[in-house]
Length: 154
Image (cartoon, rainbow, N blue to C red):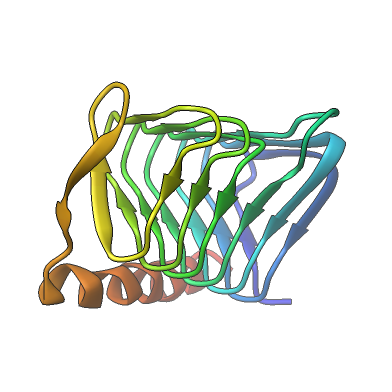
């Protein structure tokens, strides 16, 4: 499979990674008490932590997703073409819908739903505005750029 996992990334337990996805340096992905599924062409950038819950759900990341440096995903669902900014924290049972964006440093509290086509940010995260056409196009571009970059490491 043409998936890149950096040598300093740590994958534990039941972790499934789709084709052309990349897991960058210093990431910790723990599927020890539930499942972690990462779709196709998604990138999990340096220092990100992904964990699960033994009582509610695993963590599910869709296709063409960008997860910025040092983000934290815990027992949540990230839809296709979503963008999670650097150091954002997505808590238990939160759902980031397809094509949604979470700003850098945001805290998405448990059970929150971030609707498709919206930008949410802040602590706690709240609706900021609808995404522009250019931002929506960037979602797919960002994922494809990391597919290309990861090929240099394979």
